[in-house]
Image 1 (cartoon, rainbow, N blue to C red):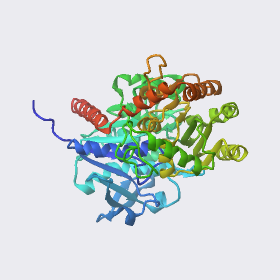
Image 2 (cartoon, helix red, strand yellow):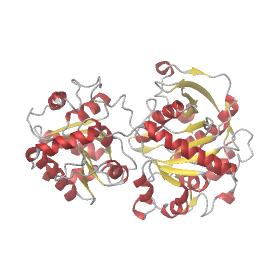
Image 3 (cartoon, rainbow, N blue to C red):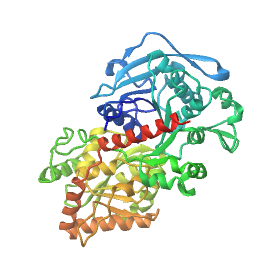
Image 4 (cartoon, rainbow, N blue to C red):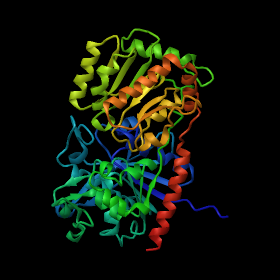
Length: 494
């Protein structure tokens, strides 16, 4: 059987680690292209050059010429383009430099308040992604858009760019990382999008008399995917569809769930240079040293009690409100809790206050520190993820690798990736609860705490089972390869 020919794939996204990252989207765009490149594909990435991205630090070089981007009623806009590489790869990354749009602090906003011109900032990114191949003299087979920020790309491909000689024949993939954020703006954005007002309909970009970019992308993309099979099912329901569940159900036959992977070169307790001691499933002595280091880091007594860790955005999606509601009951148990994260201001004050009032039980760090995140994964006995919804989640996968059984709400990727503990059979690798309630969270933390004190064989099995599990980007990349070829076949059949 002949080997399938390599494909040319352009990723367009608002984030890519390590250059710009607020969550799972940045991780995916920073990792997946490298593994697709390893399969032989010509993969490239385009994203804004936020001014936090230092060209000198990342060895970027400025390309000759200026990219002209048509912005409808605004007229043509211009940007410079910098070129770099994804770390540990030869995957090119192109950074769009426009001081007026991207020359500011923050990616999407400051202090949880979005920038007023995010509509133009990301419509510019979508349109620039379609103009960039002209500057490069490169014809992509696949345009891979991510979330609402680049969801206009499938719309543009099916309308204004349908006959474009370089991109008109490309198939489009839209990956939905988070359905909650949809890119809803005033109707006048149609004049900037410039695809004709006939697209501003119930079966197009219109929702509640506003432009909804994600809705348009869902309707127009050649194929769709989310980052877990569970989330692909959930977004077809009113609870998780955020008003677009009917639109998703219309395209259910074209929707796929592909679980994200883990970069085990970075997340491996046996080789992790950020830890005070390394360890493996065969020798967990280093994990004990990591626990003591974590307790010292937060000024907690170095006691042999269950230590629960949280590394998270402090927002309702992540169950921060559930943890706040349950924490007084949880602290009646003989345990310790460390919380690392940033998000809504109330959560900063609340968890900071809990650490102040219970210095022997609770530690809190407001912000993100990568080395500290690694130490929490290694030093904690259990990892808490009480999410209201979780498209995929990565920390539960890191936790398994580090022998730190996760306590998760069974939703989306958490449900897909964690097997509930069976005390009789000694199977499973974590603790799951289904009800979105503080009581359910408390009960499950209690179950994990009881296991720590009274079921050492069960705890050992949980750690052993979790550390044997793998979620590789190689496997995810092969599945995306199949999705790309399906999309290209569909496009060529039109």
